[in-house]
Length: 443
Picture 1 (cartoon, helix red, strand yellow):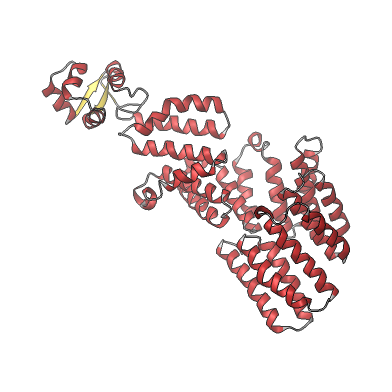
Picture 2 (picture 1 turned 135 degrees about the horizontal axis):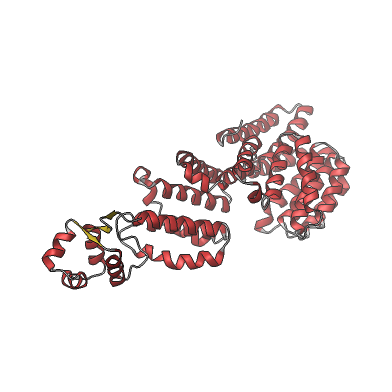
């Protein structure tokens, strides 16, 4: 609330003068509104003035700044309005958020509170990112880069929102290593300012998701644990399925078979009567991955086939599912069937930019078929493609688990053929992966 003295409100003369000059109002014009002489107004503008709530409202109406923080202490109340608007957007209460936004958006044109104006803009960017308007958000964030170069003088809450937005933007751009870096900076600020994390426990999930994208399961599991701890059970229910699936995937990565099985069984029960076909497909796909890690190839293929009926043909989910099915068939030595899966995948335009990863992966599987069948002159082509193309490409897009899988396959083969030069080359690629994982905080 505004500072009160003897029932009156304390108004800074400097703030009064600033808004007067910003509105191109002369001292003579304002003195008439205040019903005082020009000399008296000059004195007030060099010191402070006390005014009744009614007079303060009159001044604000005159300057057309109703709802803006003019008097001392009103900025604190306005900041609470901004936080409430933030919560309405996060809780997807669109109508209420729009109504409040109409009242608070003039802060961007208000000269007295640049920090509040910045906070408004950062929260608006957060909303753009949550709705997937990447280009608009990216442009706005770029305009603030210079402002945030000197972080020492920056308001900690605004800095927190800036780091969080940068993390979200980098994540949407697929640069999960940079996203993680910004999220961790936000977390460090949030831990220093407990209220920030209290209002934004989702930061733990953002960090967990970044670690998961970087194939760092131990860190993912640790931060997902913080998500479960930070949310009330009622709030968690809405996201429970997604969180449990992510947790299960990362238990699979560390061979935590029993933990993953328990989670996926719960997920299967949860989606049994669901109308969300994608969610059902994802759960079934991950059941397939669990069986694949357990080397239960037939059961894995059963789940992959079942999952495929829930995925849109040609989607990323569809191609990922087909790839893992083909990988199981290859493990089983069913080379002809592996080839047929590739032919099916080719019908989904693998040459397109968005499917380029799967073109590389399926070609790599076919080369492994050739390698296992020991066709003439195939070893050089296998090494050239998988060692020179596939593994570096997978490293570049953070698909560390798949890259290490191929390193292991080549390492075993060249170990059998006693090809020292190629074994060393594979070892170097594996080393690069482990170095990158350590750099991202892996162990």
